Image 1 (cartoon, helix red, strand yellow):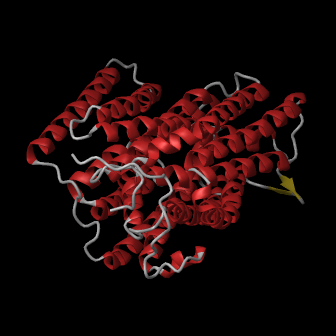
Image 2 (cartoon, rainbow, N blue to C red):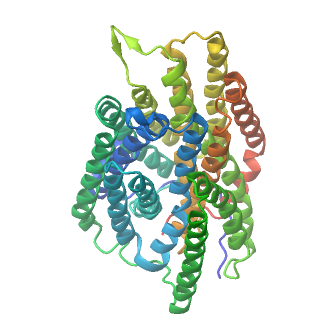
Length: 507
C-alpha cells in the first residue's frame, strides 16, 4: 500500500469549491449540505426527544406508567443505551464502506431508527427493549455514513474549514435537541410516556422522507461502497456475526428457562462489549497487513484522540442521567406556580450549543493554521471539567436537604456545551481526515467506538449515583477531565505532528 507523505495537520492555503465563498454561512448555499443538515436535524429530534424521557421513564414508579427501576439501574440503562448507539457505528461503518455504500446505509439506518421509536410508543414491556435495540442498530448505520456524505461535499477544503463545517452541522443537532425535550417532555411527563416516544417516532419519519427526496442531489456520489468486500470476506463476516448473535441468544434462552433472567444480564453483556470492542478493533487495525509503517504510526497517534474521547463522552452520558436526576430531585423548578418538567432542562444544553456553534465555526476559520487540533480537544475537556466542578459545588449546597437555584444546573450545562462545541467537531474531523483510503466510514466508526467506551464507563459509574455523596460523585468526574485535558495540552504539539502525517483533502 502506498504510504502517505508527512505534511502539517493544517494544510496550506485552502482551495475552495465554487459554491464556497469563504463565509461561515456559505455552507448553506450548497443544497447537498442542506440535505445532510436537515436529515441530521430530524434524526437528532427523535434521538434527543427519546433521550430526554428515557431515564425519567425508567425510574418513574409503575403507578405513574414508568418501569419503576431504582436510580442506579436507570442510569445504567441510559448509559449502556448510549454505549450501544455508538458501538454499532463500527459495524455500520463497515457496511457502508464494504457492502451498501454510504447512501443506502443511511437510508436503511433511518428506517431502523423509525421502527425502533414506534416500538417505544407501544405500551408493552418487551417492545421497549426491542425499540432500544432497533434504534441502536439504525443509528450505527446512519451516523458514520451520514458523516461520510458530509465529507464528500467539500473535497478540497482545508482542515480549518472542515472543522467549521462540522461545527455548523452541530446546528442541525442542536435545533432539534433544543425543541425535542420541550415537546416529548411535556407529552411524556404530563400526559403519557408513550405519547412522548411517539412524537420522537414522527420526527424520525420526517428525517427518512427528507433524506430520500434530497439524496438525488448527490448524483452518484456515495452510491457504491468505496472498498467493496470480496465474497469470501462477506461470508466470513456473516458467519462470525451469526455465531456471536446465536451464542448470545442461546445464553439468554438458557437463562430464561432457568428462571434467573433479568434485564441486568443484558446490561452486563452490553457493558462488557462496550468496554472490550474498542480495544479489540483498535488492535485489529494496527495489525492489518494493508497498512504500512506510516499508517500504523498515525493510528498509534490517534490513541491520543480516542482515549480523551472516551472520557469526554463518559461526561456527556451524565447529562441524561445524573444531571436529569439533579434537575428532578434537587432543583427548584416552580416558576410563577408552574412546575417546569425536569426534561425541559435538557433543552438548555442544546440552546447553548446553538448559540456557540456559529461562533466556533467563525473562530476556527479565523485561527486557521494557528491552532492545532489536539490542543482544541484538550481545551474542550478542561472546559467540560469546569462544568462538573460547578455541579460538585451545587452538590455541597443540597447536602442540607434544600433545593438549589436552577442557575447552578444551567451554568454547568453552559460549561459542558463550551467543551462539546470545541471537542466534538474537531474530533470528528480528525477521524475523517486521517482515515486510510476506503476506510473513512470505519475510521469514523472507530471514533464512535471511543464514544461507546466512554458511555459504557459512564453507565457503570452511574451505579454510584445515590451511593456516593453528590459532591464526590461530580468531583471525581471534574478532576479526571481537568487532569487528562492538561496532560493532552502538554502533548498537543507532538500529537499534531504525528496526525499530520495523514492529513490530506478528503477523497
